[in-house]
Length: 425
Image (cartoon, rainbow, N blue to C red; front, top):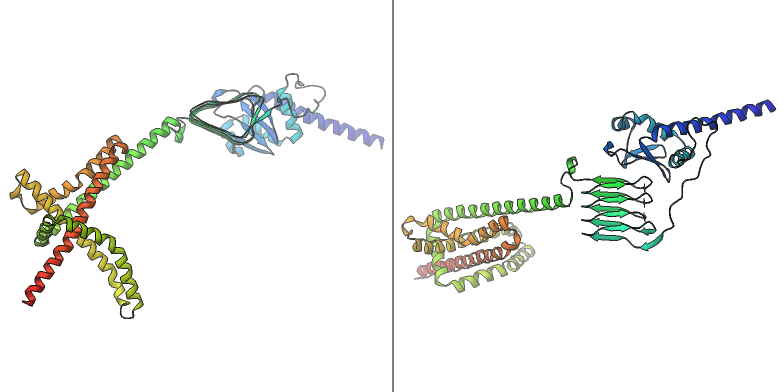
């Protein structure tokens, strides 16, 4: 029995020594290239070389993540090369061994490799200064933020400025268009996100969440900083204004083609509408405005009456055709007004011999000219300069459509009444 006890004691001592020797061996391999940090549930390795392209390697509960992204064994070998095997060996250590590894690596007086007895397991270092809570989150635009070593804040958001953290942040640290600097005693309990700048970490700083550092010029995020975001916004706005200008040109071009076709097939009606608009513009405008105001109520009442009557139910199918008829009347009326305006311009320019087609094209262009100039001004100078012109252009177009709609109704009513009088007589 005594011999069995001695054998078990020797086996246990050998196992403990092997664990200490394994931690010491890993510490020797890591200390030249990494700063080892103690985390709540694992260890963190911060490359000492600025050219490594990696901010932190976190080993938690047997899982390894690089800059907040979980990595497989193959991914570790692709990113770390020969160091991947060492990192994997660290992930195989239990919590006590990882604490021993982090504690000894951070203490210069720790036991050296090859010691005759395993070093004691030190507690997780708690040499942080006592801190006084300052209050709620900090949000700043265009200024720098500093959290002192004796301060705790809920959250830090800085836009177009830098953040220097020497104390503790209970929540997230977000910096857009600036740099984030973590001192040796800094603690961030959640994610750290830096866009358009650089994250600078001193050995000993702790980040318990994910790290996302999107710097200007990094691959697909090129131009993601504040100047880049402003530039992208300007480009998007300019492209949108160019597209709107092109759409306005297309709309006016289609309207001009329709006007020419209407003149080709119904010049007499167009001349009658133009004459009515010139002879009585006030009455024509009021008639067109009342037609627009009363259109929806009359349409609703008509549909209701047809729906409640057995005979009228089939007639509901004709409602869309009635709406299309009113649209045609509006386009024909606008063509009549454009023909009248174009005729006046042709007379002023001495183009009276060039025919009705030139007149109607001149009229459409004259009515839409202010809108076109406004759209072109928006492309060149921005919406601030173009808005007044755009408003005037829309008013001019609305008046032309309203006047033409009323003139078309009055011209049709006058023509129908004259035909009735002729038929009666």
